[in-house]
Length: 136
Ligand code: ATP
Ligand code: MG
Image 1 (cartoon, helix red, strand yellow):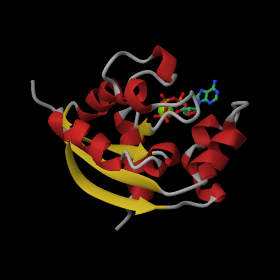
Image 2 (cartoon, protein in one colour):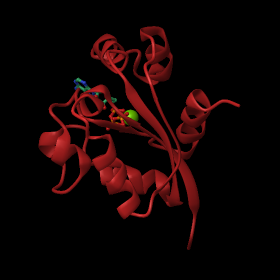
Image 3 (cartoon, protein in one colour):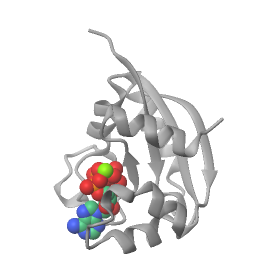
Image 4 (cartoon, protein in one colour):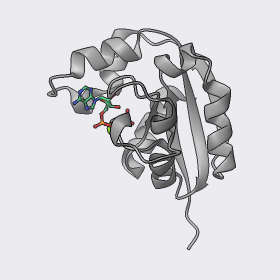
């Protein structure tokens, strides 16, 4: 059954800094996720705190917000069949050490915090996160 979805993807500062943006975009396109929107931005720590609000009770929350706001990021809307789950599979496990071969995090992730990409984890969060970065 075909279920065309949209999801939010972020190329995090560690990957933008290493000029991996085009390589990562190519991986999404090869796996049939179309890049509908893309922009390179830098967000403030307050914006990162708002974006990662679901993690506010976690011990790593402050570092996470500092990190996402530490340099340019590329935010994208990806579209395709089962885009939300498909993107999560293409990204691999949160900890690059545990990610499967050929996933973005296995290929490029440096550590559990510098793990190169973010992807929405549910339909509800995908809609919220798309609105967060692409309000019109
Ligand atoms: P993301 O939301 O970035 O796509 P994820 O859904 O795989 O990643 P989450 O559990 O949502 O993982 O955690 C959000 C981010 O917080 C992770 O990408 C990672 O950078 C960071 N993080 C998660 N767990 C830890 C941890 N134990 N220590 C440090 N940072 C962590
Ligand atoms: Mg998450």
